[in-house]
Length: 597
Ligand code: N2P
Figure 1: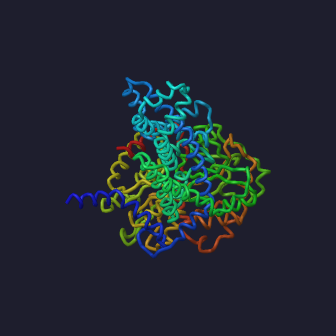
Figure 2: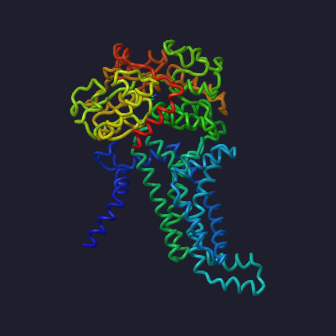
Figure 3: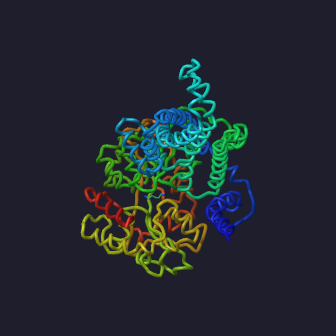
């Protein structure tokens, strides 16, 4: 009986990992069906330059962290041992950082770095990793140190050795397995940290876990399973080595798993041809699913530069990062209402039109809008609508927001994880403007969203179309481009702009006031304005282009697709989301309450 229980517990622990490993070899794209064995995802993952760059960053950070944290940890362990008496209190202080939630550590470090005037980048990542690994390193070395007989070092000093000599010749060799175990543990902790790193990474310091997470955001590809399996194998091997050393195994015995683990991490470098060396970089921060890696690659080749691409899923997330002031982005893609607030805060740089010869390709219908009347700061990129996509076979025909509140759809509804869009749906359902600033109306909208919560399976603004495709939900609020792609994959899915009306968005490229590479930023924006490039972007992403010259180049099927270019009567029902100024904090608070209650 106990044996059966033990098997069940281990299965519970390891089943998700086993599924991940298995599906990294699945030749089909979907996790719902097994289509045969392939190594293609590994080949794809190993050939991905962005992945290699992030792995390179991860290795650099992990090596630096290991060296620094292990040295400090060893010194601390020796210091603690020397202080006989009163140790317990110090031990507790050491263990504390291990227990402090990672989000707290991340958020406080961002504040600290801002106060110290440090720009977020590789250095801040290393500092953060050293910070959270010192405790682990100290505890592991201290455990080994406790088994040492202090009389040995005393004997060496009695025989005339200096304390330093006694440490290096007597204590250190005896401590070596503990130090190595600590080093391996620190390396493993650093190489797969996500939470703290995502706070302090800034641009150009994307590590492997951060990259994997952004891959998930731009659409789930089984290549992620392959990368994750490699990362899993490498960390497991390193931890086995650390564990063996702690158990007193010979260093040579532990070397086998350690070297194997490191070799797995080095594999992508062996598989890659050396990247074209270039020190010109451009930091682009844009919506997920808004530009294809292939398009970025073309720009990189043409200008012999490297583009750091970071992705976001809400204007609020982007604004928070840009307002924090210690990130170095060159190009952003805010929605109209976010541009209003960026301009008001003086955070954008006026554009140099002479550096944008293809500006004339923009459809004049999208120029001179309220958020930037003379287009001094922004160049339109994509426009689109928010609506509901649904499974016809499950819910019939949908034409109203009420469907997202229908108790029959309990647990089958997805809402955008986006303040203005979620409130927009509720407000439209009430027949109100989605730009209302009336606190009483907003309180009612909040009540509606709270009442809807039991029906909602997920709040998601990144890969909502995948959740619908997978069958997990039957109805999803979301943005039209990604839904257009879903409909092509599964004709059971339909998209509608509800009869009560919905939101319209207009997203533009802008250059932050403090952009470190404004010239390249102009070159990039102009590149996206070229008719062929804009057409490629629109055709791969399926959002609606604001580029008149590109529209003419789009395949007829796309131009005639009502999900991408909705009929006039549906468009007439939409309303542009606008900056609500002083009411913004109210919206934010009400939305946080909906999510947390
Ligand atoms: C991108 C979604 C479209 C952005 N993933 C809506 N402004």
